[in-house]
Image (cartoon, rainbow, N blue to C red; front, side, top):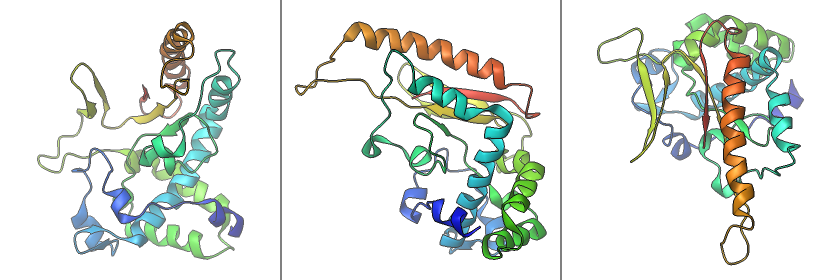
Amino acid sequence: MEDVLKQITVPSIEEADQYTPFDYFDFRQMQEKDLDTAGGFSEKYLTLQMFYKYGLMRFFNDMLMLDEFDKELLESPLCFIPCIPERQNVYQKYGQTDYQFIYLRNNLFIENLSADEIKTLEGCLSDEQLGFDRLLEIVAKTYQKVLLVRDLSNMEEAFELIYELGAFSMKSARNNAAVFEIATSAAFDKDGNYINITNEQNKDKELAEFQKRMEENTNGILGIPVTVFIR
C-alpha cells in the first residue's frame, strides 16, 4: 500500500474549486461525515477522493480495457500528441493513471458513501493490512453512487447533466454516467502555424470515429451509461 500512496497526486483546495459542474457537491453531507472545512473542501476530503479515484481507475481499466484505447491513440500513424502539463485540466492532471490521452471527467462524490464505508476507506489509506484489494472491493460495490450526480435543489432522479456549454457546442451526459474525456494537442511550428493542416483534419475525423467506437465497446459493461467527450 505504501507504493500505492506514492503514486497518488492530490489537488489543492484552490484547484478543486475548478471542478465543473460544482453545484452538485453536498457540503452538508461532508460536514455530517467530518469531511469538510467551513463549508468547503478539506485536504482530508480531497485525499480520500483521489485515493478512491486511484482504485476506481484500476477497476475501470480491468472492466473496460482503457489502457488499450489509450495505447491505440499513442501508436496511431497520425501521431496524436498528448497535452502538455500546462494545458491539462484538473481532471487530467489528477487522473491517477499513466494514460497519455484518456481520463475520467466525472466528479467523485465520496460524501455519498456511508459512514462505515468512509471509515473503511480511511482504513485502507492508513493500514497496510487492509491493502489494495480491499480498496477495489469498496470501489466495485460503491462506484455507481459515487459517480451519481444528485440535483440537490429538487432531488430529480434522472436528468441530462451539462458538463460544458460553448457558443456552438455542448457536452452533456446522463447524471448516472461514467464520463471519460480524450485530450490531444495539435502540432504547430515555431510561428504557431499548423505543421500539417491535412493531418490535423484527419486526426479530427479519426477521433470522432474513435469516440463512437469507444462508447459502443464500453457501454453495457458497468451497469450505467458510458459517455466519451473529446477536448
